[in-house]
Figure 1 (cartoon, helix red, strand yellow):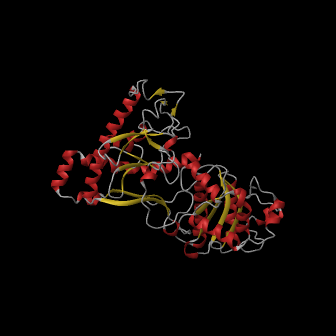
Figure 2: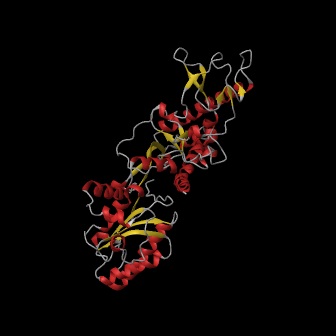
Figure 3: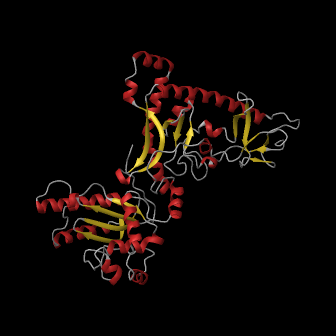
Length: 452
């Protein structure tokens, strides 16, 4: 499930670098530099990207640029690479690619790091290079390849470059590009992660921590037992806004809705002793399934969300008896508008009875899905998975701590077990689970849509 992801945010520049394969010399003479520069000039006129700074070195080239839209950078790099490979291979009778895999890129917090990035790119050799943007950005020489960044001011940049880029800033920029994470402050990174619902910062590697029950129920802010005296004047309005679940990275799913939810989101098994089914709705940030207006993006809203702001719980004294809980801090409750939870005589209102009936039905379905998940877990056919981007040292885990059915282990089960599972509908549920995993790509698509 590992893949590299290219993130685009409108009007945010990117630091881009592409190295040659096995330190192959890309530019052997001035004619090679001139040919590459000509390709850059032609492509800059296409308006796919605006190049603010660049440097051509024998074994790599590097840019600070702002793409026009989501696919502009990839098109720009693809065309540029294809043009130069054709030129180089024909001139030097070379066969195959010149480049070491895909280009590396890092989003940039321009207000803080623009001049640092320009200096990092342009002054690696500490001299004016005719195959860089330094002549225009520092000396004001003509260079049609370069488009000044909107916040660039020559006097400020010249003053900035009087001080050498220190090792700390140099290493920070280098590591952000190497790991392909955002070159920016923690506050800016968190702001963008919240905006696009996707992790942009580097995560510590290691064994995933188990989620606590408190974290899993974060959509309930203040669960209390419903009391007919304390809450006798409480009213409730209709559930229309799902922003209470915006910070939830997954949503529990019952078997009866596996197909409905699985049409749009990947459904997986939780780890631990009490396995269950959940729909993954996030890539490390806020829920991608809920828009800014608090609406579920798809037609079917999972039953787990529809039972809010109510819940069932057991007491220590009577573990088999369920008590009604409410999120007392929910915006759905008030004493001035909505429908009463209790009648004047203290009896349940119709709306409260309906809520209790819904909770009861939900609990019954939850027991079914827990038994199903326990059966699958005990059979030994589950394997741990994660959703990540990048590889090796660049790898960032976005979602972790879940399991999926291993097809080989499933097919290796004895005929008697498989026949019984077919008869009881277990195989049908497993097929729906496996099919839903195709929707992992949809999460990335939703994240890209949110960027725009």
